[in-house]
Length: 334
Image (spheres, one colour):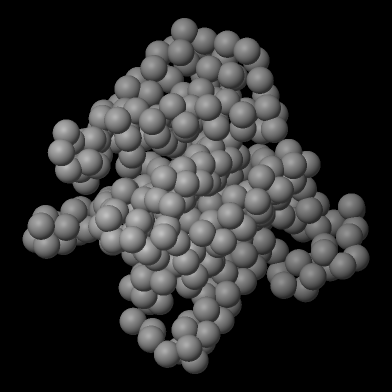
């Protein structure tokens, strides 16, 4: 763990360099390889007649921006959920929030014929909020409040419920099934930059609120009586934190579909490197989450070219063994 200010600053610069490397790789590599000179030329002196310039400007740039936003959003949402529930296994994917958002997006696309992310994002927010409330109430115990084990079990049940409902709707609407199937597996391809940019202010506001809440979030690991004795309004902090999680998870699902395990793994990486201070954990989780999703998407293009694997499958391959390891560690410590 990095403890001194110099070490943490150096670690933050290393994370930033890792993100820049992942973003550059995302722009360079794919079925059509692009040289670094061509990349610079496409950004500084765009030539519509150049195939490499066209690929960068029309496909990979928007894809890279989408992966960056979604990876950062899921990582921050996961860190906030783990703090909010005091559960190291919490994440938007594990606790059903992503599945709830996905189901309502499917409802919007199949029943109400919504197509643009700016329209689908509102459906995603509603679904994420309903799923969060369900898991919250199902995870409560009569005397001890939120139970980590009950919360995870409730999340698994809510996820299965919403996923099965979404699959049923798609079976009944065969015309939309093929167009939405790849998105359900998690993908950042085919996202137009004009559709993504309107969601940036929502993401930025949620990120700013999360950073402003960082000092209060550092106290949420204490007992509620101790927190109240310190003058912290626990209910307001938890409500704002929950709203930020819903906004970040809903926006991510509307942009890229179901992408799991980023919100589970990355917060543990950030805490392992920078400690438990949320003033460091949240921004570093954002950098690491964005870099991880960019790297996963780049690898997904290179495994079986010219076809590509949904990025949600890649993150699941990475995240499943780490989730099992975390579950064993939690069981040993309990």
